[in-house]
Length: 341
Image: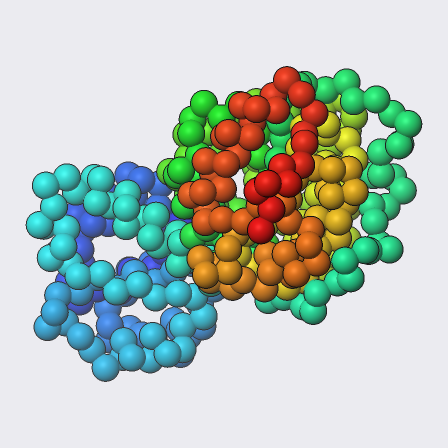
């Protein structure tokens, strides 16, 4: 893990009054890149990209006209914090942890990549030859289930709800493919650590172990071999949005006997071909319901083609996954036709 999980700039009219907050943030591995007053706000400050977010720490009567410029022109998100809120807390350490989670959510949502039109349901652009497992190979890896989690716009909030509801004793591991800028992967890791009871790590070459949430990198392609080893390739993902959900779903569908995929909130352009690959091998594909998505286009594209086997809220899907793992941990995945929507 990187030493610092979040880089922020602080805007305050009184550095002494904001000092207690800055101390607590620093103790929680937040990197305070700069501290400026409202009078220092100008075009150059608004254009800064060397930090993840601006935190404006003010009393009610501290508002300055230059803050309007920051809110309108800043290249990174801006969060307004009422300074007095900290002094009202019985447990300031816990309050600051929640503040950091909220800052991270804003950063992640801002960092999500735009999407392109949906690709065809049956894609001709399957895994490249050097990564496609031989169809005649036999799986010699571990017995536990390994599921793929795909998300794009609106994904961080859906993932938060899902992992908060997923029981700790769910005996499986999960590969998380979240469309996001590479600089924000450590932030996503930190947030998922707060949301879940699983061990969270960024993908590295080595064996996949039970009880892990593995976040796929953005610039390096990942694939899993027939022996259960995860390998990180220096070559990039093939798709326009990375990590490419289609690519990892196709790979896992081909090699891992006990698997499935869940498609959460996101814009169209990824996930359909991967869902097709999963269903060709009779692995389940689940989708978040449209009314609970920030952007329903990605799960709805999968559902519109009849590739899903279950739909629900993030909390419902977490409960369903725990039940599915308990039922199938000693047998091959089976399609539950009764649950189809």
